[in-house]
Image (cartoon, rainbow, N blue to C red):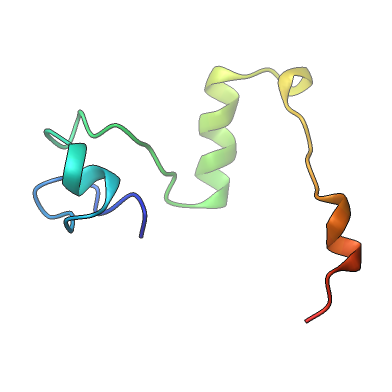
Length: 64
């Protein structure tokens, strides 16, 4: 996990929160706990017309 545990004290070294977090309320990054909550949280800061959909054009060329 790049972010690390929510509580920086419990976050592993090498994660953002483990290396730079100070306390649970001041931990540099936020990650929603579900897609539904993510949509609610994004709506707190952005209007629908401010959001942009993004996709890589190269995806249609990549085969696994």
